[in-house]
Length: 282
Ligand code: NDP
Image 1 (cartoon, rainbow, N blue to C red):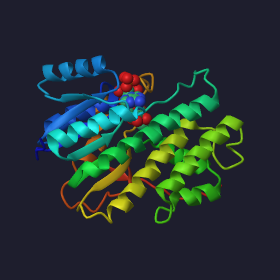
Image 2: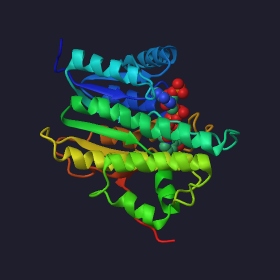
Image 3: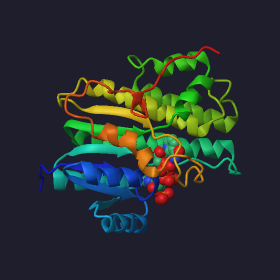
Image 4: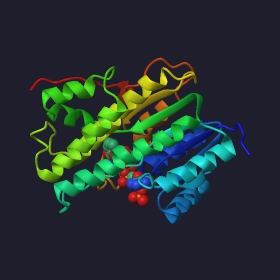
């Protein structure tokens, strides 16, 4: 049965910034809010914790690296809501500085999760987006730092948003991973930064998505990438200075942008402000 009740989905929200985004949406959004997690037990526990605060989120399992779980969520949304109004792609990973995993492994796993996983979720769920839907892809300001470290020709390709296609971007991300395995990533213009490269992918993906959606018959769908700031979570080993609610502020702002928003739209946003995405000469 399909319905028209409004619905929001947040990926990787059993803890950290995603959890705070769900909490914020429960307070601000008129509709059902889905806390999703790859681990069902952790997800259900998070929903229980929110309930104690009076925030009534719902749960659906989702591992962004497992296409079968993405497809199950898609079917569930289609059958129960007939669409999707807010998608916050928050799930992500980062190896610790102290990790002993090889750069090759870090590049492969980080890009597979942060870039390919996020893109797979988008490719599955974007057909469900209703007019006025909002998408916030949680990237990082590390994408801006890593862009500056790319060779200028590569930077030029990555900022030429009117020209670069999603297939081009997929190829570039694959080239980064393949070259990291061979130790030749610097030769082809990429820095030794697996997380940064993966988040370049997320930022550019968001800009391409917005450009493509401008041609869509569904009106007023807005996609942005963002940085939550440096946040006190497991990912940062609790070194970040922002609370999870402060980190959730920009993603929530983007998820709740009012109808007919013209800006930010297809941008990279930090602290609610549009950030630069441009070539820096060395
Ligand atoms: P946490 O490590 O605290 O939380 C990450 C969340 O993503 C967890 O719920 C984790 O689930 C989930 N996750 C990881 N892999 C998958 C997967 N394959 N499928 C589904 N869920 C998954 O990180 P933060 O809250 O700090 O980070 C949230 C986002 O913000 C990330 O995209 C991160 O890159 C970004 N970011 C964070 C910054 C910070 O300072 N914290 C700064 C800039 C960007 P599980 O519990 O099962 O591991």
